[in-house]
Image 1 (cartoon, rainbow, N blue to C red):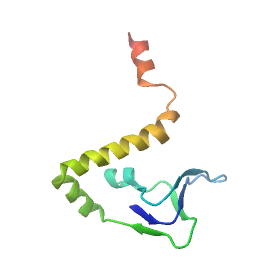
Image 2: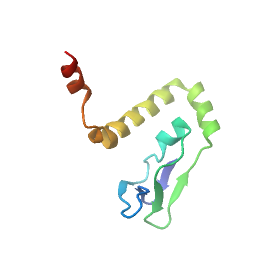
Image 3: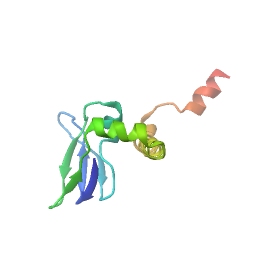
Length: 104
């Protein structure tokens, strides 16, 4: 999904204290990891402005585009890497470089 207009927040589904995972502005992509993995969305998308417009593409259609357009596939992979590096990498207790040093 691509945010076309407005602002949204992605909220974690924690029981008692929901946390804002990210705040997105127009032009940013939502749920790219879930689309690529055919997984279920973990967070909740909350519109923070009116109007808010999102462009959604069916998963099967998106898969077809990825198979046909290799340049687009590489750009999507770069986007996914950015998300993992920015939001998930800091959560890992040990970095790959540290793991390599321990095994040496």
